[in-house]
Image (cartoon, rainbow, N blue to C red):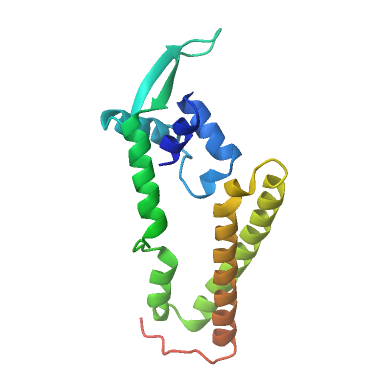
Length: 180
């Protein structure tokens, strides 16, 4: 979806796609850490007829670059994917709720220590996200920051929950017999 949406904006080569995702901080919501994953995704989109090669060019001493563009089928597929993703909540299985489901595997003090580490990590992520949003507002239209604002709300809610859970555990309002 991310790559297809970029080539719907304008034809571009794979390196530029990865660059734009990072520049726009979309790498917070899509994994493009490995350039190879970008190329594998492009291959799938080409195979499925959602992308087409617009041109292959070489600039000075740089490697040859292939510029891709969306096909009409790609544009329609992207619209369908977006509609489905926006309209229908997906059943997702993030790790943290799974860890909460099996919390009694750890002794209470060990669980509390882990939760405190998570609080620190969430506070750091929230601070970094606030900086990203503030910086982004200087050069991006608000529309391009909505996923960051959503993440901020999610992380804030998780932080509130984990702080409450850690307080309950630390104050003895939540305890269990450790047997594992």
